[in-house]
Length: 250
Image (cartoon, rainbow, N blue to C red; front, side, top):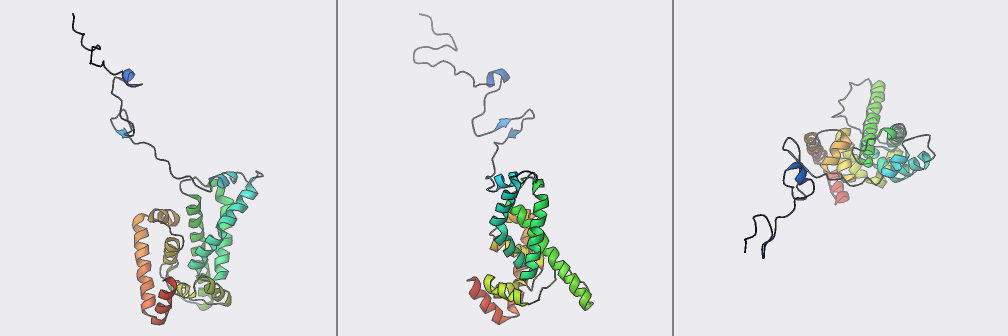
């Protein structure tokens, strides 16, 4: 009896496995699943990982065309979802209710004009929070400019500007959002306030802060560290405020 020829099946000996689809045509062995594919340059293309779906994607898509009938209800729903959170951020940065409302109004006015240009490179909410941060800081700058005209003082740098204004509307808002906390925040830079508000009020990660503040990771970490030191200095110089602050944030 002739022995089976090499490469053919025989008793107890399986034949060669057929090549995977596409491998025979290229002459290369197939790559196991999950390891990506090999490019012509020999580099391995990693499998595509999809980002979590933006919960606001459908509403944002409906706002692409202001002439579309879907625009108005979609925009109103975005406003309903985010108005309170946008106001909270604006209030923490500006330090009083009047300026916070001005910043909120400007933020949603910008959103109305720019939502069609949103490129989905981040979550819509993160992009919106960047708008309110910028509008709030601009509001603080405008307020400081008006105050300088009245007082004839030298312009303070935005990084070290201090907002100490107190008015009845501000006092009422402080009672709602945490008076001692806001009093302490009002004594540090608006940019530092923004970093603290987004980190601890909105619970943003460092990566989300990079997008919302439009800065690098190093700047985010540096700004948060500076904010903690600045806040600590405020509380160290006012022991009574420190006691109340620790009670409120406990």
